[in-house]
View 1: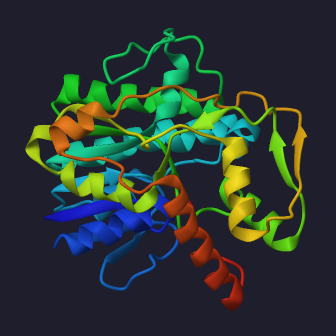
View 2: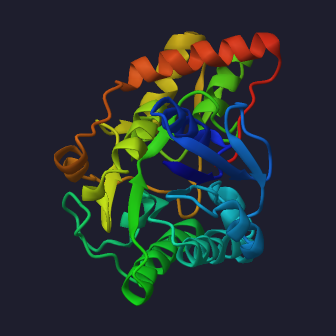
Length: 311
């Protein structure tokens, strides 16, 4: 298959590219910076450029759309730019897919969309998402992107798959994310700072496990379906700090400061459908994934500052 990956030079995208290449697919990386490997085709195209997208995706059998404003702090500070990239960019990718007759387009969404679910129980792909309660510009942009995708299917017959990511972690993470910041603080002997009480949780999913799901989702049984790609267990931010302290600097202090507006408190999200339909599960335990990440971080630090791409 010839498969395009928007945002293929970023953190998650680069791992998805790795898995697709390993599975024997011809990969086109669509990004504004070059990919990390040379055995792919690179197209320097922004997702807001429809003409460029039409050229870049010509002849493709599938498109994985990962390019987005993914830093929630950037989204909060720049709402208009966030909607332009995340929502209008998604519409342009789907229009390129429609015009080029691409077999299927895949949207990288997020479990943050469940902030808009008015239920207290475990949520799954059939849980209705409300218009109110998205709580954050980033979340709203992802809910809107999903609506773009399903509308293109209903109106134009463009096949899709929506992949709602849990919170990924692992090598090549962006430096401003929680885990890299904690590791950097620990390495430098500075206290780890937690916003809020630290009880907010994420079902962290190791990025290589997450990338595996993309290859599995190419199967036709995933067409016009939505899947939660959630981690195996809830992990509180306080536990993240304690694991980092144990791996990097056992004497490190942990400090608490006021919480951030619109922060994702965490929900119990079922990944049973991905297991049942795709045969996918996140198999890497959190502590093991953290050990791999800190080993990578230390190796990169010895060679210079760790490099992390944009999703």
